[in-house]
Image (tube, rainbow, N blue to C red; front, side, top):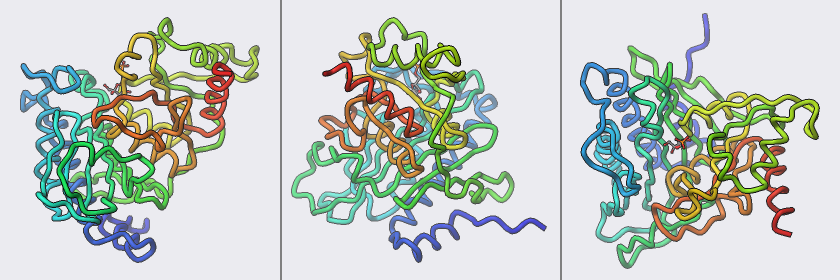
Length: 337
Ligand code: P6P
């Protein structure tokens, strides 16, 4: 008889004993897990509920919102407000910071989230995900300025994602490694299925939207060209390529079997600073990848060290196996000397 798998609650209680996560953090993580469970249900039944289509509205990013973008956002807003220690919410789908407390205190949480990432995959039944990031206030806030949420990713106390794929995975870190859970249909529980996820040092798989080749900078072209040259080129080995248009799916694959993911700033998106958002995409995924032994960089700077200048700021993202990320960084350094 296979050993009973740990539930999310049992895992969090163990983390509380082993690594001292607070009861409030436990409650917040369980609220996030509940949000993901509800969103997973909505997606699975999307075709019957007629909610896979687009709305008439656009978000702050100028992207047309899918109905499920709005539904997922509302689910996160309502569930992540339960924990009395959440001072503010920052959502990809909402222009302004949502302040839940008039006088935020030291120890309160700021929660950043992309409620439904990759939603262009929805009506073709491909993977989408939710991404979340938590920062703990280090002092009371005198004013409710949006600038108060502009905190470096290195200060995260929790980050993770939920992948709505053939099964629903919840992968998270509170700073003591990365663990993944799978939603069990029927009982509705998240059970531990990917304990202590670690990236291999090496990989032969890269993920990038190659249709943007003509816009790339020289260091990115050099790296991808060398991968494509395979065993006859300087890398002396063949590479495989994947692109699923879902950062959550790419990162989960990389955490599971290795790889490197690139969404660099290029000539076509440089005016926006890149495509992916720092606070609720790059930072949480960078935290998770680093906790699993990988690296996350803009090409020139560790992502978690980037000082945010706006809560919807975009950034160049290169993350995954340490050896590949360091090689790509070296190409950027050579270019700038
Ligand atoms: P493209 C989804 O819209 C997303 O933000 C990431 O999840 C994904 O990696 C990327 O954009 C896909 O971008 O340009 O290939 O559609």
